[in-house]
Image (cartoon, rainbow, N blue to C red; front, side, top):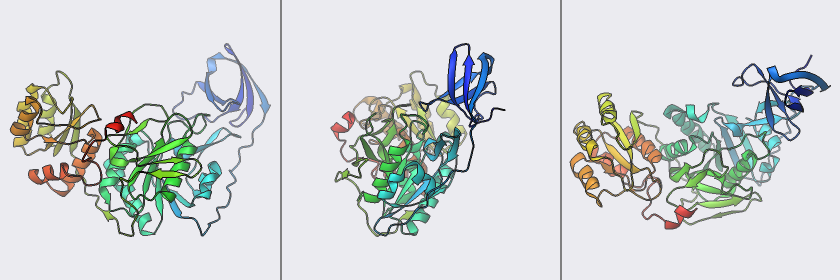
Length: 423
């Protein structure tokens, strides 16, 4: 009998394939076989194309042996918190099975170089695809990070799915202010069983950053290019995923990277970030979840905003065109939102640059007649998270406007660096 973990030879209508039979994931249809080739890649083969299957060598699925982690007194203490995502798994190439890498021992086995830089403790706090995360998950992550900081760790690494990592990093930046140590979010674009995986180098550089960087901010650490040479450290409120699959998918928006780190432990920082201190962090998890983000598009129906007003949303973020514009036909409904005391924050779909309501007549009318708040150089995602945070503190429109246009945690640049567009 053929079982997962066995090495087999499959003859099909398209040729012969040799590899390890893998346990079929739930998302794969039942009419397909998954095998791992010697190259490390997985392929799926439709059962109706299979002519024959020959057993080459029986596998012996067994419990992974985990090396003992020995604490070294001269190294900083780092906590790794796992929230899910590709980076939190490893593949046992004997059996073809995927094992969650959720303990310190698992991380060491998959990437033992991290022990050269820190004493590692690791635990899982959730196991959720990043697109399924909600503000309630953000709050839980903030609380868990706060617990670790209170224990006196020297830095924290949070493994996270990449799709919404910039939302979570921004949320933590607002909910956990006055950080004494760095909080480093990291993910991977490629699964660990692919030869081009970025999971291990990303985790390594995240640990190096948490252990050696002199900064104390909530940041994202990901590839600078498609090569395995340098990772960049980006402020959580100024980062964005800009590509669906490239390993260098993340970019700092409207500012340069805070630091660059290589895989040999070298880290070079800029001067523009908060440094480590012995202060106590301020945890404030009050978020108003009734906030919407809307991307303006030509011909957009005013009914979209009208529905948000009817549903009694407490805040709206608009991603407008250019300097922060929407069609003039939305002005009446935006006036209605202002009358209902619903703050509307304007950002730009351009992402880079800053909005300005004083350049064109459209912007002037939006600010004067509809009380639209122009969000400086906030990205739409960061503006969305920030508005949730601000409305969690106050519902006073003037106070909301003041807080939304004030730099709280590095989310607003006093001057947009022109070189940031070229990074």
